[in-house]
Length: 131
Length: 100
Image (cartoon, rainbow over all chains, first blue to last red; front, side):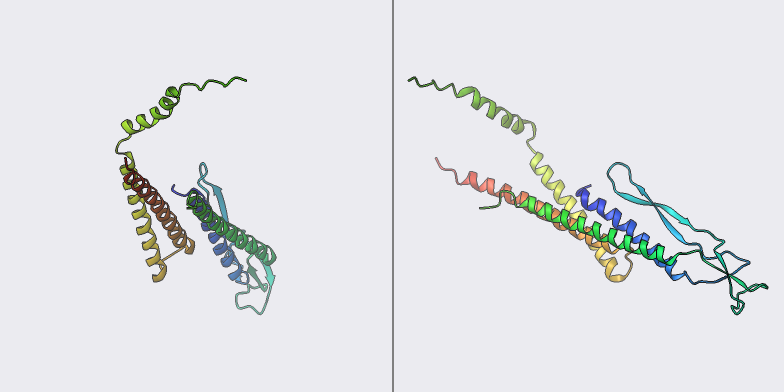
């Protein structure tokens, strides 16, 4: 690896981008109703894993939330069953918003690492160039 | 009051000169080789950066940051290569300015 700090921060940027994608999917489907005969939308959670040595962080896989969701009594909903219940995904909006902020801040922090690393390498090139 | 005698200079010069002599004999073509290798690496980095830039403007890019990181890497590597080249040329010019 030529410039390791930049590469490591790059892997972390990818992980945070995927986390952001997962949160976007969860938020988009937070109000997706499903009939009680089938599963509800399953929330997606990114499983991060440290790479070997100092190679950064990687997405090991995507875990899915509970398929049972929560049953809501909505007799007017066309998807409602005979007793008037539909299935909503078990997604906590406030929790997702908190994760959204964490993903954003993590992405920003790693972008800063790339920037600072570049500045450091450039200042290394200035050594002995005073004349 | 006594003046301390100045020690022989010979061994000191030998100690300084011997590593340089070893380096000259053992690693004759290494500077040229490493410079060529660095230029090859730089070319690869720049072609990767170009590919990612094309993907970015054509909408085939998954990660925005990968294009920017590749461009940053290529830029820093180019600066390092230019600095090494300038140092080499400076040393060469310094030697050429030597006069008896």
